[in-house]
Length: 300
Image (cartoon, rainbow, N blue to C red; front, side, top):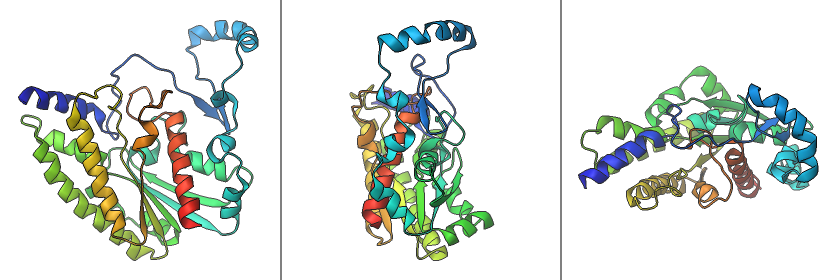
């Protein structure tokens, strides 16, 4: 059991979404986008000349993939007019707060991530929705609880119709840091109770600031499922913390839980950035589509 705890310690140390970049596996190039079109990954300078020489030949031999050439609006909203109509019928303000997933760490551009993709897709023709992004890499629930009181965040939430949140992964990392010499599953269970209490406070504060706002909490995904299926504790931790998050939202008529774990489980394409834990553009696109589905279905 002690050996298994050490394994969990090592893996969780590189799991958490808000920490630094750590490479477990060899580099796997992810997609990039420019403007609203998905582009090929940039090649190192030493390969640029060769790539330019063979570009025409490769294009003739193999048709480009749908992911590389499909406009972003088609990828995310599938050109469904009902989605754009939904937002065009009202002035909508979205406030996104939380950790590195809200900030968009792992995306090919600074304005990427699922929030950036939503912004680009919805506002491609004209601005239908105003987005404020307050994602901060490494934020825990206690830090987010304190940050909600900052004037700029309060002002944004006060105007918000929709609040999107990603939080909790760094709370798990804190458990690892504080108990790394003798890590036990019970440590995560105790921390989860405190996390639930802070999460309820976060929702209450947001609702007090803007009673009209609907709050959406994105769940955890499991980056280890395809590599470490034999270590059941990893999946249990993710499952239990997701369950706690969903439980809190179900107790509130203004809050909704958005699951993401199924978006990454068993995917045939690479959905992770070079650190193998944050989503790449393809992963964030799946998250954006899921959020958009919940906004249009739940709100409509």
